[in-house]
Length: 168
Length: 209
Image (cartoon, rainbow over all chains, first blue to last red; front, side, top):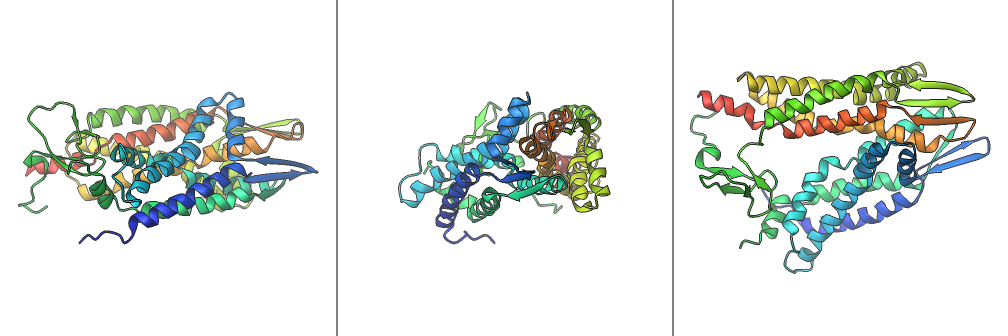
C-alpha cells in the first residue's frame, strides 16, 4: 500500500534552502590546506578545477565542474522553482513538470558524495608528505550531502507529479 | 510469473520513463511526448542493445590506456615519479593504509571491470534470448547502475592533489594522461548502463510463454 509522505513539500523545501546555504559556504571556503615548512597552500573546489584547466585538461575540468558544482546547483534551484509556488499556494510555475523531469534525470551526475570520499583519500595520501588541515568547507560539504539526500528522500514524486499535472 | 498477468504494453499503453504516467499510444509510432512531463515516449528504449554494445566497446578500448598510463606525475626535489592506478594502490598497501588501498582498488579497478563484464553478459543474454534467472539479471543491472558513479573517486583525488600540491621546486603533482582516459571510461559506462533497457530481459520470457 502506498501513502503520501507527511508534509513532503514543506520538509523538502526547507532542506533545499538549507542545502543552498551550505552550498554557498562550501564553495567560498577552502576545503583543504597544506602546510609544509612555513608554506601554506589552500584550495577551494573552484581553484582545483581552475588548476586542471590550466594544465590543458579542459575536459576533466568541465567534468568535475559539472558533477560537483553545476549539477547539484541546478538540482537545488530546480527544486526551489518547483516547490516555492506550491508552498505559497499558487499555480505550479511555468514548465515546472519539465523542470522536475530534468532534476530527476541529472540526479546520477551529481557526485558530491563521491567527491567527499575523494577528499578523504587525498587527506590520507598527502598525510605522508605534509601537514594537512581540513577546512570549513569539508564540514559544510558533508552537511550539504546529508541535506540534499534528505531533501530528495522527503520529496514525494507521486504527489508532486499529481500537483504539477496541468491537464486537469 | 502468473499466467493472468498482463503488461501495459499488451494493452497499448506506454509508461513514461520519467514521470511513470501511463499513456495510450496511437497506432502510428510517431515521435510521442508525455502529456504530463514532456519526455519522449517509447515502449522500450530505442536501439537499446546496439547503443549499449557500442558504448561498452568504446569503454573497453579506453580501459587499457586508463590502467597502463600514469594517472599522476609527482615531481619532488628534482626526482620524477609517475603513478598509475595500480601503483597507487600498491603504494597505499605498503604504507599500511590498506583501507584506502581497498577503496581505490574497488572504485577504480574492480568496479569498472565488473561493470563492463556485467553489461556484456546482459547484452549477450538478451541477444541470445536467454531465459536464465531473469530476476537476478535485473538485480545485476540495478547494481551496475547504482555503483558506477563511485568510480569517479580517483578523478576527484587527482583534482585535489593537483590543486593542493604545487610547492614549486619542493613538490608538484600534475595529472597524467590516464586521468582523461579513466574519466571517459566512467562516463561512457554510465551512459552504457543508462541505455540498456532491463525490460528486454523480460520480453524474451513473455514471448516464449
